[in-house]
Image (tube, rainbow, N blue to C red; front, side):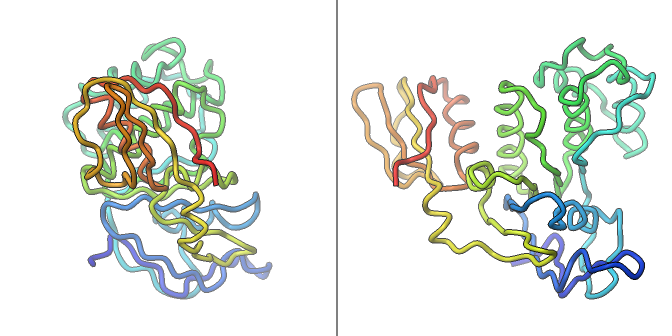
Length: 270
């Protein structure tokens, strides 16, 4: 399978300090969501900066240069520009001509103060929404998100999950980090763990524990053949789905697009 970007034996060291990354191998194919689990200081953010071409490794090779949308762990607010003006400015720098999607995207994210809100007045969570809008606006081939759920309100959590699913559905890929295992398993197709600068693939058996139960209501047809659905039990207009790890957002998006209501989303009992 063709890779968007591939890291082979990549290491990173700042000056003469201890290595931040050690012999990292990572292959990012098109149409995948890759979650990276790890504690603060484990090397997650450094790895994302290498994927975004914002930093260079000190050893190993990186092959591929996809168009990237990048959300850092803390969006640098504080500018006097409004959210709309900032996004228009950055979109033009990225070569985007059609700017009509900016206001609807900010509305979808429920930015407090709306598109005219000055960046310097925004909370961390709302500044994060502007950063997320900037990252997805250009429809990148590779969407890179550093602790994206941190600081967002509950409604924005749902929208973020939808944006990740939509990115995957159009054939692009997502790499995101989080320190919570449940969040990583819920959204990722492939899960890795950073441990003292080393990237370790999480075994499939561990991912299987992260299946999700989704209860839908409405005339939705046959769900048994849907990608990511391992079981579908229908009782009239009530449908209970067992969804494999990494497919929850995509299944929810399809359900909402078909006009079904979502009654429950919960981890499956072991």
